[in-house]
Amino acid sequence: MHSVVFGGFAPRELALRIDDARPKAVVSASCGIEGTRVIPYKPLLDEALSLARYRPDISVVLQRPQAHAELSGRDVDWDAAMASSEPADCVPVAATDPLYVLYTSGTTGRPKGVVRDNGGHAVALAWSMANVYDIGPGDVWWAASDVGWVVGHSYIVYAPLLAGATTVLYEGKPVGTPDAGAFWRVVSEYGVKALFTAPTAMRAIKKADPEAALLAGYDLERFRCLFLAGERLDPDTYAWARRVLDVPVIDNWWQTETGWPIAANPRGLEPMAVKPGSPSVPMPGYDLRILDPDGGECPAGQEGAIALRLPLPPGTLTTLWQDDDRFVESYLSRYPGHYLTGDGGYVDENGYVFVMGRMDDVINVAGHRLSTGAMEEVVAAHPDVAECAVIAVHDALKGQVPRAFVVLKVTATCDTDRLEAEIVREVRHRIGAIASLKDVTVVAALPKTRSGKILRGSMRDIANGYDAPPPATIDDPEVLETLRRALRKETSC
Image 1 (cartoon, one colour):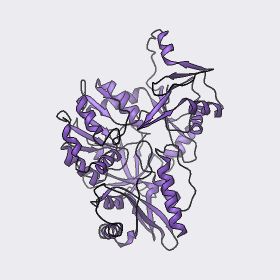
Image 2 (spheres, one colour):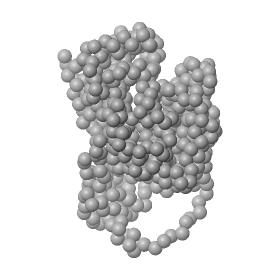
Image 3 (cartoon, helix red, strand yellow):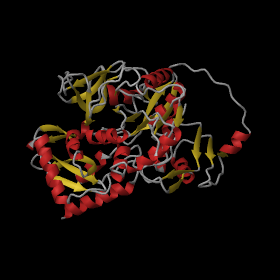
Image 4 (cartoon, one colour):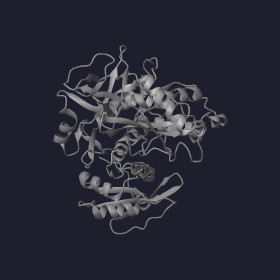
């Protein structure tokens, strides 16, 4: 079994995972590369091991040329160990034996170790690679994610190997390494058939190169499809990517816990018409239901909690590591007989699923429940907005009111006052006066996790006056601190 932890965790967070997993060995590189920064890992690992109650037998370190790590005690040099190693035969395991543990943040601060099995995992990934992503032997596939996240586990490593496809591993950013044409360079150079990334990556490229001028220098003749997942795909980003790439842009929706798409457009089986804003339809094995607060099923078009009627299909989590009770409490107790995804949305009259965001992102304005995802869709459609987030802020009269934060395109021409007036007017027109959006703040960047998800919960806590610490998964803590300072300044005024 293995448990991969991405390189951005602070020592305390790494120590928590070491204590929970109790590994025989810890394997690390001497450093990681984040854009223009080299991050030494060994000091972080040493501090984590000093904080952890559990002690692994050995620590194996791969020395990268960008930073040399000093070894001592339990440390073993990767190259030296490989030079003296002997091949080992494969070990048969049961289909139900655990393959890996992947930690996801828990609401209590204690990480939840999602357990994936061997057999069901292989079945789901082999089926989805062929039927969802239309990738087979000899194809070149690129999942532009971090190996430490579920996309990395499922679709950088295991699925391409099971499919007999070539997989591209990329250490870099969509912009800045060196420019917003980095993705197109990789697609061109390796003859990538399909790219899987997050909508955030497309928004970053669109912000830096709105007319996709950097595409011109690259040959994308073999490029057939762009898949986006990890957060809600807004229609504006969909339309931009579809226009500049001139290939199908396919949304798909899933979670760390499920390991493969819950809802998707089966490109290798029977491609369906694309509906912007929808990841299309549930995949085989997922009995998706939209439930009201009492557990009743909602009619087509009505928003509710997205739940999956048990049993779950192969490839999904089997439990939480060493904590069956927490697995039941977290996922299976709210609606008996169902797995609670934590997301809200609806299914239209044609069976297409629309995921509107986390249930805790639903805003309650004067007793009316409104989706921040629907408001973000309107805000993102403004021609000067590169990306945005709408959060709920406490209001003494209405309970909650929405507040929008926007990042502008480099080509933006609208002044702040006019931008705010236009966005407020459009939300009122599209959502209704009850939405009460009156506050639009322009920011340089939005705080995100390293997988590209906007930290709406942290933003909401700060806006409501809570001194929320940066979460362990944050990409750039300074972005959150800048936002915190701006909000404090506005409050003091």
